[in-house]
Image 1 (tube, one colour):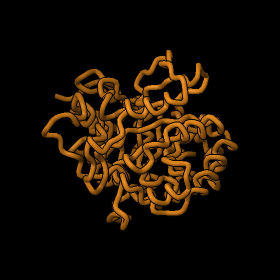
Image 2 (spheres, one colour; image 1 turned 90 degrees about the vertical axis):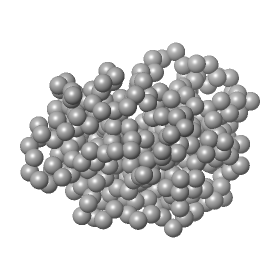
Image 3 (cartoon, rainbow, N blue to C red; image 1 turned 90 degrees about the horizontal axis):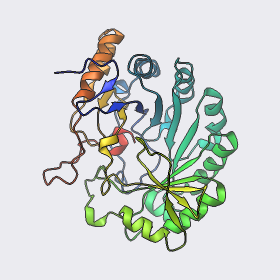
Length: 334
């Protein structure tokens, strides 16, 4: 059975309105929780969707499938030469989707204004430490100042709220939660801690090494008063707290220990044109073949609906039979 609903609905009544579009699997950092020091075998250029193909799929998602928000991811999406044109084309759609990008911040100082002018609404920037030496140890690149400059550039360009994404690694930067929050508060950024997920290329993730949401919150409360955010969470992945009474907030995306699968509203498109109905899905649905085979928009839309209809109720990390996806995060898109 497949869905006859015009949108991206699954068997459990969830409706996907948030599209994550990976623009490339390549990255200019080598963060230890994502990929090995030597990098990965990158997708051949011929397999990557062209700018026109990306825009066609976004157009189908927005105009036929009810997608309301598009976030560009990677790899590192700022490495995509056509990103400004892709953003501009997406911003020209009617209805206009909300547009954001998740980036490591390298190159953002240069691209913030062109992206804003193209129609980008805001950015999420990954920053796991405010110590340059620790940054180099985690990312294996001395690009800390480039990230800081990118954050400043995004804020100056009005790509707000600027959100920070931080992953704490046991024995590496797990003492840094309060310092990261102080940094975010000082600069007016919104901080989100993310539990490390089993999406590394090395398949080295283990639950006992992961810094949990409870540990993160316990660390923060040594310096800050946190109260639950009264605002409706909806399908947002982050559970948020008011800091010292607000209005500043801090969030934790606890995909492992506090899963929010029941409210998931996301659909994902890889750089090579595969639909993934869950970040941890073991299977994919090929849209690139339809695109290049001459399929009409409605045929592509129906294939996408069918892919989402089969979404599982949850990611299953707690199931003893859980298998990590074959693709790592850098090839899936965040």
